Length: 283
Image (cartoon, rainbow, N blue to C red; front, side, top):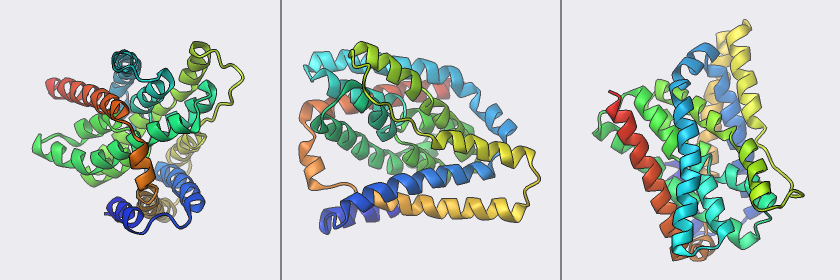
């Protein structure tokens, strides 16, 4: 509902404070993810997420190759194609923001890739819980699927939290494990595009999330404190989803070309459907 409210606000009213909106959505989301770590046990989360490790390796590398292949067939420029594939393979806008400076993508290429990922994220946040219930997926199955097939961390956490606590635990662990692939991808990207001087932006909130989980597991923090942090974090997530929705504009929608949309949708369908079939077949 918060995301929908943000979308309607942006499309009907516009963006009165775009810079504030961008920063608010970014930092509120990061704070929310870190805070959720205080509600998770390290051993339980690793046990929940270990099955997703091999899945992560296969889907990240496979998505990048499939995106490259489809992009060439569509004759889409290589950097836009690469950014969309990276956003789909790893963690949406965070991956695009990290890889973009490394390959020296221009503002147009970045905005197109971010626009596509944003639109597909909005669809996934509403669609995935409905599909999970229709397919009678368990908490563990849905958490794993959403972490692999939804782009941004915000939408993964949002969709999984509506499905259940176990789904949230699995989804967050697997998704942040995927997000660590930003580091090797950035180095590989610099070699592919021969842009070794590009700056690399890494999502340090992932490390803080792990620290929060370790503190919650190994230190005698009072329940009233950790429960309070988790409750506030969930409220921050709701607010951040509103700001993310409010980031959409008619300009972003118009900037997304047909070929880029086709690439984004096809790559997303490939990873979404294939991962779903594998998960369901393992029942």
